[in-house]
Length: 67
Image (cartoon, rainbow, N blue to C red; front, side, top):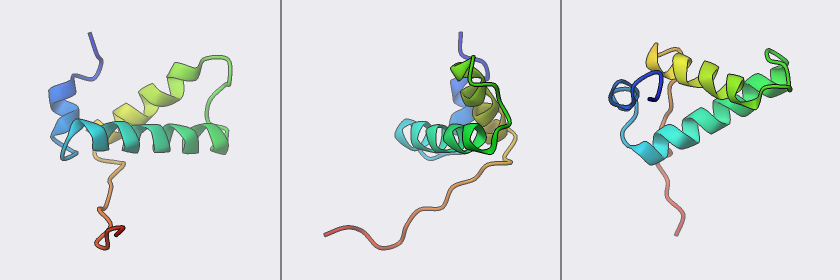
């Protein structure tokens, strides 16, 4: 079981692909900032998901597209 639940996470993003990208980017930021031990790689992802569900982490779509 995913904790936090996927349906709750999707309320703060527009689709699953965006959720994955936002969570991965935020997890890398958490690791680079040194907030987590490097011994457990899943901890940064868990923190990122908790921030997304609590709306502390938000995303913004780029208006210009690549052509």
